[in-house]
Length: 110
Image 1 (cartoon, one colour):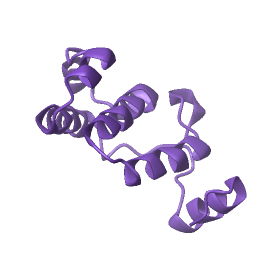
Image 2 (tube, rainbow, N blue to C red; image 1 turned 45 degrees about the vertical axis):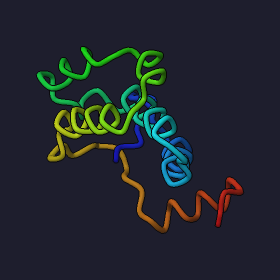
Image 3 (tube, helix red, strand yellow; image 1 turned 90 degrees about the vertical axis):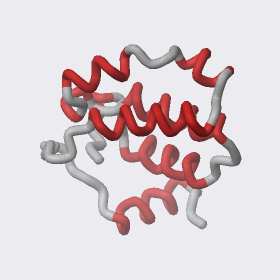
């Protein structure tokens, strides 16, 4: 995943976001993680046509009020279909070792 600040994403946010996904206790937490990802992902990574489909999804407040497994699945599927996986970011992509080192520096190590 690109960690460019141009899209609002950073190494630190990537680590924190992954930790939040791992610690999700319910569908509300998963929806929150998806909303964060949707809003911070680098715009060049999202295909324009599919990005428009994401824009017609319910607003964040509506999504959280009516959070169901089905709505989380739909939101994840829409985002997954919108992401251009063949996009090669110019920014550095973190390795697992770099993520672990950053976690240790941030005091998030397991």
